[in-house]
Structure formats: C-alpha cells, structure tokens
Length: 200
Image 1 (tube, rainbow, N blue to C red):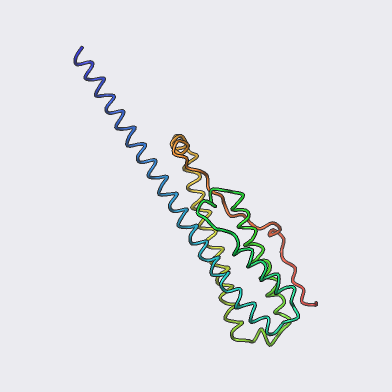
Image 2: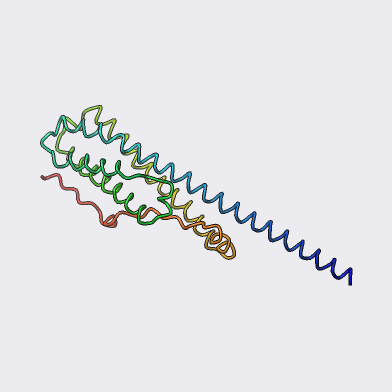
C-alpha cells in the first residue's frame, strides 16, 4: 500500500512538473511574440513620424512656386494636423477601431501628398529645384519604408495571433488575457489604379 501511495505521489509530481514547464514555455513563447509585435509597431510609428516631419518642408517649398494651389496645400497641412492629433499608444494594436482610425488618418495624408506631387508636374521650375528634389526623394524613400514596416508588423502580428489561437495555447492566452493584434489593411479604393491627368 505504501509503495502504491508513493508511486501515485511520484506520478502527480511528474505530471505537475510537466504541466509547469509547459505553461512556462508557452507563456514565454507568447511573450516573445508579443514583444516582437511591440517592436515592429514602434518601427511603424518611427517611419510615419519621419513622413510627418518631411511634410512641412515639402509644403513650404511647393508654396513658394505654386502659391495659388491653396486647396491642395491646405489639404496636405490639414491631413498632417489630423495625423499629429491622434494619440498613438501601444494599446492601439489591441483595438481594431483605434487602429483603423490611425490608418485612415495616415492614408488621408498619403493621398494628399500624392495630389501635391501631381500638382508639382505643372511647375517645371519647381521640379528642377534641388531642395524639392531632395525632399521628394526622401519622401519616396519614407513611403517605401512605411510599406516595408507595415508588412513586417503584419507578419509579426500574424505569428502572434496564430500562436494565441492554437490549441492548447489558446487556453493559456485566454487565462493571461493575451489579446489579438489588429492588422494594417489596404486603403479603400487602392485596388483601382490611380488616374493621372496633367491636362488641368
């Protein structure tokens, strides 16, 4: 009887240890994935801030040549202001509605910048201005970085979201309140090719 009791106790200890190490390993794995999402989110914010910092210089340069294009310049300035007014937090990636609001403001600024660059085509002197060319090049590079960082963020969020939904990790994720991360999505209408018309 004593041997049987010791055997059961030993089995319980082994099961307890296996369960402990499984919980520890799964929890730590989810934390690593969540920290990767956090780091990628910080990089997305970084490149968006770089774009926002370039906008005033670009607008000022264009304004000198195309002052009567007030509507376009005001749209760019207003869009940048909206982007700047959004309070960006780490929790934003856990809230799809806030993430959509952030993305909509960024898409609006991107659209306004595209219209501004189309206006520039009407001003050959501006297109030849070294300061403008440098700013335009920096902006194009920043837009490429934004695309790359958004892709990296989505990949990281996908790995994290997949992990917290897999069984049996989903039980642990629910217990420790690991929440799904939102994704960046394409801007509405981006499936259509833009119309370029220099006749105006």
